[in-house]
Image (cartoon, rainbow, N blue to C red; front, side):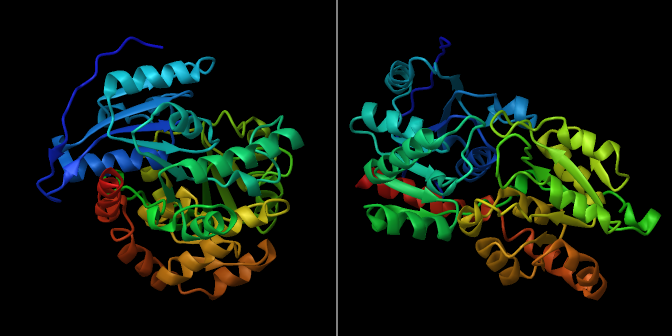
Length: 391
């Protein structure tokens, strides 16, 4: 592990909340956009009254998103072979008041619980691995799936507090595990106002009079049964002479491989683009008509019903209505704010698009984009931190 200098700050009083604000240590095996959006909003809201540190295994934020380290006082790569030793070193030097550990998987939360002693550990449940029937990594087998379930139970039950990416995940965990619901909150994958596009590209459909849908995020062809195996869905969209544009993430878990690029080479309606930095991506996709959030539910339907992926809010932040299958949480969210279309099958897509009032739909999206941001919701997280410190 790197040798690093740390800022040593005592708890200060935030001018906006009039409460003590801790030094916060984020942990995550692979830093993700949800964690980065938290950091951006905390910095915007609290300014210099907060100190943030990030410990991780995988790629840096900059490598994945083109920025991010500037929001943290330190980012540290943990030693995957000596996790406990790495964790102790960070804790001893940084002396956090709160550990905010993000899954998945859950190994860093469990290590923090074992090592942190008197420091409150908050477990942020992005993914419920016990309903990932296809596994998480390419080589996951039944033994590893059983281990994930055990680790999930321990991380949820032994952490001091929990944050859930949706109310559906919150309900699932509270029903499955012995947790104190008083120390739980749901915090959705809201968009980041700070990186939201302020200008928009001209629509491709204005030029060619054809419909262009975009998909951003994970895709895979190597995790058998994964909800991110979207090849057949994309082929069927293209069969209706509707364009689908794919911007894959650089993801070492789901293996965004060349399969989708090859798929695009033989179909003029499928387009596989290069991975872009986060800010550039959100601007680039403004040229399309809709964002796609329909997943492969063959094996992981229960997971899809309680999840709300980041991409749904990111489409809205780029002023794109969302098209999705009736995954329960996604459907409820889209219908609540009137920000998209729900179809049961790809074959319904052409008729649904012919019958929709596009301008009315776009109006709902435009009105919602500034409401559904992390910045507008961040006081809820700060209050939760303060509650956990006071317990």
